[in-house]
Length: 221
Ligand SMILES: C[S@@+](CC[C@H](N)C(=O)[O-])C[C@H]1O[C@@H](n2cnc3c(N)ncnc32)[C@H](O)[C@@H]1O
Image (cartoon, rainbow, N blue to C red; front, top):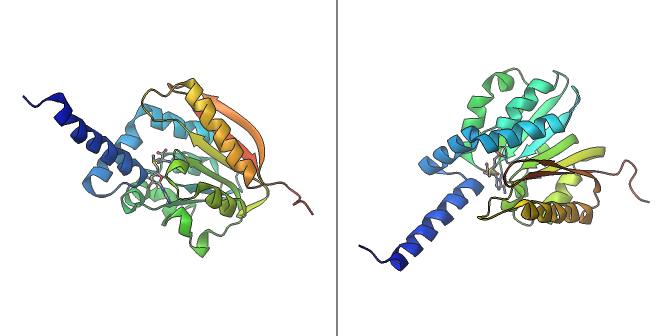
């Protein structure tokens, strides 16, 4: 039998690979990760929760960054009217395929547009302006999140809203961890000139937090 210490690096390497897959699903493992995200109860509940919490108007133009298998997009596309539009961007080709299949009818109907790109290199088609920009468990994977949020904030209409949802996935995460994450997200949003509106919590284990901020309606002179 292998000594326990010999197994530790292998276990660590498997965990590292899996975490990496959630940040950028690729290949066969990425397809499996996408399936897990589409079916795991906590993941579905997080995404359905944010779709309801956003309370979107039928005419809203909305952008999701890091849509994964497209659960929130599917829910929101039922809530916006034909005068609104839902855009999504994700840097994973595998997620683009899964989310496109899941949202095929809304894409065909011209209500949803999904694009494969990094949030660090958004195409001009995603210049906006948007009424709402949101991301679910994606911010932690972005390069230079403050700079990304600054750029995204500039794509909001004055008064437009940004919602960042997070459920900490680190081993041993507790309600305290979620509160700390919420405070860090709030600080980041405020550091790029967005006004904190509220922080909501969904009672999963650990809790999910949604930090909502808005672009000030009148820019400071
Ligand atoms: C943990 S998954 C969450 C997926 C989805 N929001 C959900 O809750 O089901 C993170 C997603 O963000 C995407 N992502 C991570 N970094 C990104 C980046 N720099 N640009 C665009 N998408 C990114 C990943 O490809 C992945 O689909």
